Image (cartoon, rainbow, N blue to C red; front, side, top):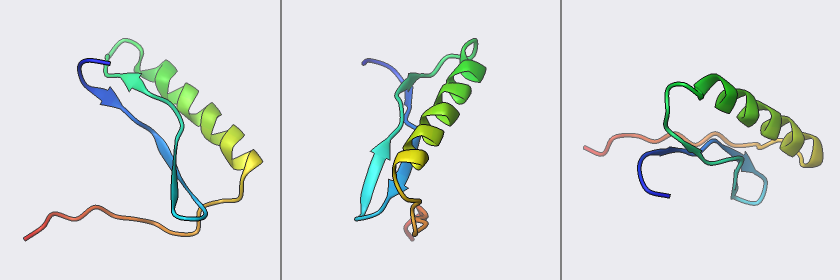
Length: 61
């Protein structure tokens, strides 16, 4: 997929990252994309346990 993309994800047990969806960055469809990601997250959370860790990205010095 050429161009910029948005990749919403969920941190799952076992040090796994679950990609919920892939969106091309466009302004006109943003609300629909956010709703789609929320629905995908609800399905994922209903089928799997919640993530136990939070990972933060920090700028290196």
